[in-house]
Image (tube, rainbow, N blue to C red; front, top):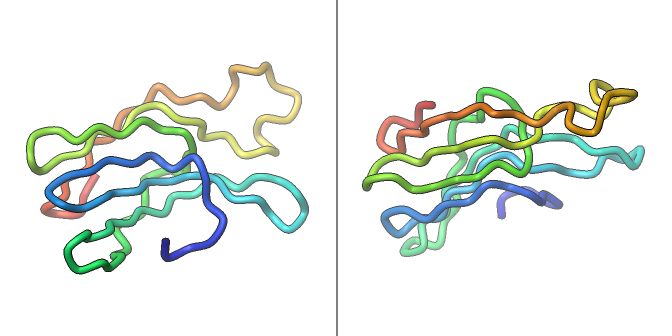
Amino acid sequence: MPVDSVSLSASASLNGSIYLFGGVSATAEGGLNNRADAYRFDAKQRRWTTLRPLPRAARAMTAVAWDSRYILLAGGYIASQAEAAGKPAEFGFSSGLHLYDTATDQY
């Protein structure tokens, strides 16, 4: 991957490429940082490309390839540790949807 130490990224395979969206990284202070990064790995060329970032940083989303052009991104956890402090356990989960267009690099 083009970045270190990211987990819980959403992933989908489409047209010979692997797409990764969001995820979470540990901070130097021992906290967690949701990510908005997005990448495509071209299996033929064995090369990573940076894509347009997600509209909002998120981890643990679901990604599903749709048709031969789109990737549907659903759910995930969007709250930062500071936002979630003192809130109920379900706070921070998203019911949001994004449709990523692989041809235009747009959500």
